[in-house]
Image (cartoon, rainbow, N blue to C red; front, side, top):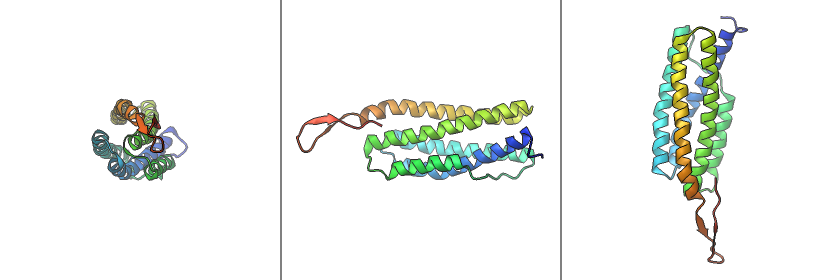
Length: 178
């Protein structure tokens, strides 16, 4: 396969998102563990299973292309996961931690949505409808996950913004919203 072709770029982008998904399978359990909300924790766990399915779809595409399923290191996902790890190392607690985790998770989802949207467009241009179908399925799942995170954030962000006691005065002041 010629590296300087749309097909070569397609395979290169597949390798990138394959690496991203593999990295995410290691990060999601940590995010689930850091979540205070059971609903958020369950969401991260469910998305981990879904992500494993994304990896399997990618492996199907690599096999059909006659390519080895391997990823080049996805620097974008590495950075997003590093930011998420920083959030988990902060002193945030409860709903504020969950709001921060949702923010980090949505950055990941938006990155994946952009990557899969591009891959779908490439597959369509290459006349590879079977690949486009698999990629579109993953794209829709990423969009659904983003929507679920948005819905969760409405309740969690509001809870994170509740009044907290000011120990020094006994008065109440607004909390920090994520």
